[in-house]
Structures are given as C-alpha cells and as structure tokens.
Image 1 (tube, helix red, strand yellow):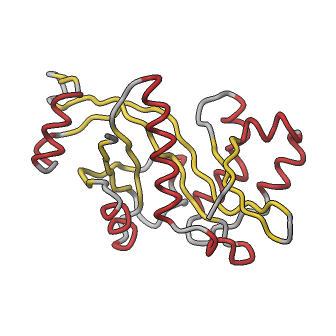
Image 2 (cartoon, one colour):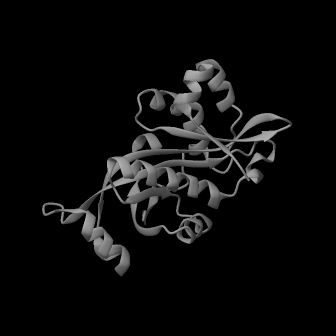
Length: 201
C-alpha cells in the first residue's frame, strides 16, 4: 500500500497552525497516553524549534487524506554497558562508541525514535502495520545518518511482553532500563522504560 509521508513542519508551513492542530486532534491512541499527549500538546512546538521533527503518515479514504500514524525522530547520546549486549551488537558498539573512563561506560551517538504510534480513530490503525511504520522510521534514520553520521537507532518502551517482542522481531536489542523523569511520571504504568538498540546497516 502506498502512503504519503509529510513532516509536521511542512504541514504547518502549508496549511497553518490552526488547521494543522485540527488534523493532529483527530489522532487517538488509547493504548499509549504518552503517544497521544505528545502529538496533541508538544509536537508542534518541538517541530518549530527543530528539536524533534515529527513525520505524519496519511492514507486516503473517500478521496480525502486521513492521518493514520506518526513517528518522531531526534538525536541523543546514551551510555551503554557492552556486557549487556550480545556478541555481534557488542562488536559494533565497540567500533562506534567512545569509552568514558569515569563512568566506565561507552557513550554512543544514536538516532532516537522518540515517538511511534498509530491512529485508532475510526479503526484507522488497521490501515498500516506496526512493522511498516517502524520500518519507515528506520528508513528515515538511514537517510539522515548518511548526512549527519551515526549507525544506531535507539528507542524506549514500557516493560510489556508484546512490545518487547515486537521490537526484538524488528531487529532491536534490549540492553537496559531508564528511570522516568519527574515530567514523565503518570504517563506510563511503571517507573522505568526498557532501552533498546538497533544497528542501521
């Protein structure tokens, strides 16, 4: 199936902020309060500052575009303990990371998939698979890394079996946990998120 991707900043410049926000308001994700809250309340501001570009995925219904999903990508430096990774990922990490003797950890520049979600309004989520959406995000990362450098994609998810299996199936490797910041508490069911890493070849 052919989808149309448009960056949120391009949408803002094309149709204006009021219309853009009306489009974003049609997005509903009852499975993740964080994913829905981010698109409604934070995405526009961060897109305008170019801190975390959001990419919107549209399909067509009755000749009209409908928002079916989105993802947000930015960059981040993370610390990783190599022994928590499998042999293949450990070798790649040691090739690209910088060792911090003080922390006794390896510091790695990554492309962060900060948000990834499907629109459950009117069952629009059925129009795109999670695998396809995640692949779109990884493809966008590969394009950006060809320009700015980097070889890894990073994301965080709740400690839920089906989520971890989904990301593992798509090539991500679990390596640690991160405690929630104060501003994140209440958006998730636990006080930490699972950390996952993927080598983008």
